[in-house]
Image 1: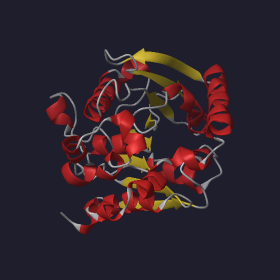
Image 2 (image 1 turned 90 degrees about the horizontal axis):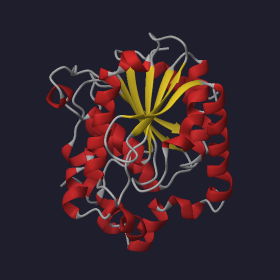
Image 3 (image 1 turned 180 degrees about the vertical axis):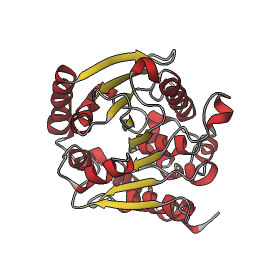
Length: 293
């Protein structure tokens, strides 16, 4: 195995926790970060043209929200939230739709079942079910199925990479190979073994070595098309999150498959989403460029 995939042997469990257990470094997470996002998301749902809790699968949380800009031909941004596959809810992230709808983008925010009720393997399957539903039901959702970009943060970044690695014609014979036109994994977890070794996190995920190997984009899931990707990480994030972003782009970028690594200046794992929601930020502008605006 390459050096990029064996570095975790140099870390102690305590060092892993410091690198990956990010909420421990933000004591205001439950009192400031989440309430701020939740309030802004309630405003978004109250003021935007949206349809919420559209079921795309049988799982309890297999629902999605659509935020419409009023132009069915506009680009479609599909967003998968983070939370280490065991926390979070799509309703917290409606706020991200506000600046994109204003920029003439249709936004879909996807929910999915969480560990330990389901496995990471099943979450990847649910995400494929969501993408298949979005493409097949685009007319009813009033969005453009031919201009889909996928974006996700943290665990959602991993999901984004897994969607880029999906051979869609194998999922459904009616699906196009290039179903996804661009990908934006934000602070992605590209290699899962270090997460498995972070005891505080894996207690809720319950990932074993075989699943960590099988569900890692770095080991089993290269991109299936040459769709461009913007790989994002916060400038103030831990060494491991920078490494997770770099190793993916270094392995899979080619002249035909561009992958820019963009470091959002001065922000940590959580505040980078606040920068994304700022329509005046370079991060927002780079995302719009990926959408073809």
